[in-house]
Image (cartoon, one colour):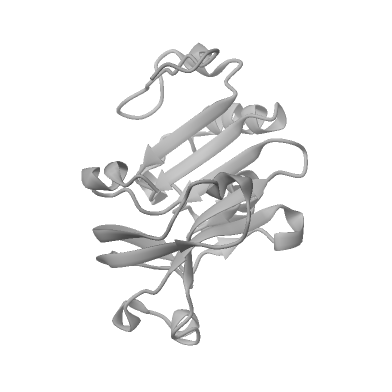
Length: 189
């Protein structure tokens, strides 16, 4: 269904050959692999991302897009609300039951749901709650997936899989580490 005033533009296979498609963007959805595969970390592209953030552009970060190099972790937390780093972060594929937490407006109409076999990143570095961070979706992970000392200290804890972030200088973000499987896009919640 078309939404009045919304003109979506899709860029596939990395960064747009015509960077002007980002000019004036109100929101940029980044659905990608992370780490060394990020298409926007090259210096001039990163500068474009920072200029979008300063202009108040919203960001939606899906799948492994939150996976970053340590030197970018503070920037990712400030822009997107979270950063996955191998120091404490864990990843894997398993069935997960997700439940909404809190009363954030983004959760309107979201009910608990199951996401079988999807891929997840958790035990992330998050922006501080008093600096605009809000957990949205949590769930239990298999204890055997806790692959490092920090994660093992939190046995039994619901892990944050989805979050919202209000940037101090304006602009918002939403992150969700799932959506590895195409079927994940079909879950109404």
